[in-house]
Image 1 (tube, rainbow, N blue to C red):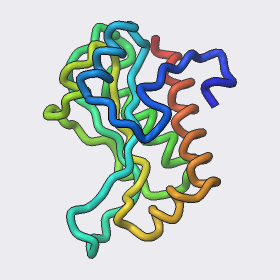
Image 2 (cartoon, one colour; image 1 turned 45 degrees about the vertical axis):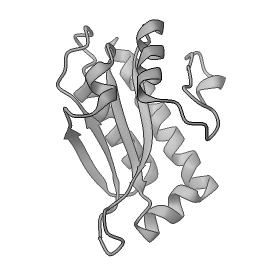
Image 3 (spheres, rainbow, N blue to C red; image 1 turned 90 degrees about the horizontal axis):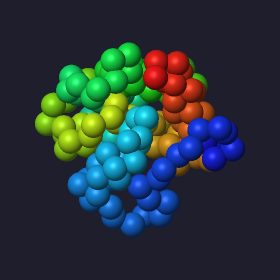
Image 4 (cartoon, helix red, strand yellow; image 1 turned 30 degrees about the vertical axis):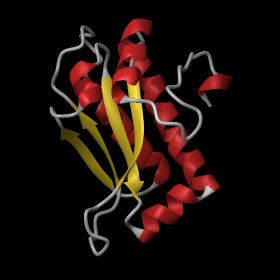
Length: 149
């Protein structure tokens, strides 16, 4: 979706090849990107858990961008993915112990698109239409985020 827009996206990977967190942060910082979004699927420790839904993680760390904070970016992602996908919105969660957010110099958030340990979320995540809706939610959040840059 981003490739068909006026927004330039830099991907840390386009295949299932491992790229270290250090390499990802280095790329973002060297490019002086406008923002960094890390897309994940969540999982519960126990398969019997009832945890489900999307959530976004952020750090209170300052990034040099006054209007687009990590928290604001996380909120935009959380709301837009949840609204577009129609699954439970677990909200935003402050995490200060994550490498990406501790070392990134630009607004950074992690979007957890659903729980792979929840049958309903997993069905949605693996479906083509589900992934498309998740992608549109992330895209909408990015477009909104640019209003704060």
